[in-house]
Length: 177
Image 1 (cartoon, one colour):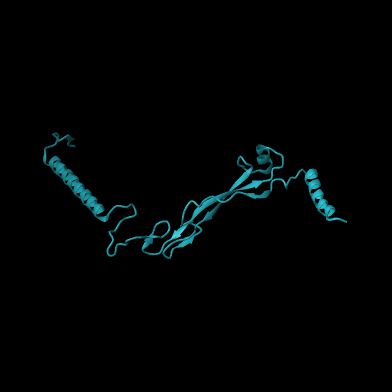
Image 2 (image 1 turned 90 degrees about the horizontal axis):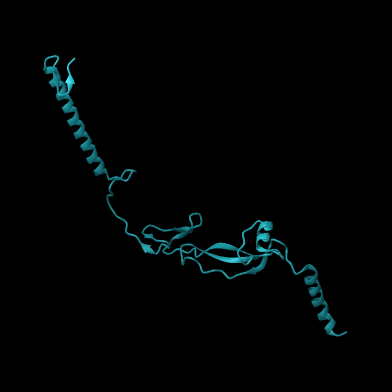
């Protein structure tokens, strides 16, 4: 027996399989075809890249496949898959997967912890939670006290003027009772 029938037999079975089964894959599953990854959006400090993974839609159109598989497809009947990349940080920083950024050590900052940050040493100016400097609040309080004192003094002087006049006379818009 020659080697010719040994080669023809597996090829024939494969052709028969594709002919009978129409060469389809499991419907709504990912095929083994993907595109290459895109370039990462950042060089360090965490970025994002994507690739396309093709979905088996058999002979259905894109809208039919989306409806039956309950997924959103691109024009090429594929799904865009995102993944993180370049999670490296400089100068002792560590990448935090929760915040998706670098946690930088004291004295460094920036997206990748590659920038030195000057820290002010000594006394810091006190701020309230509303963000106003303490000096401005004190100045405002002094103005309020002065205005209040002026108003109270003026009111007291008006009462004195009213009590010193005879009854029945009008004094500065008041009727004596």
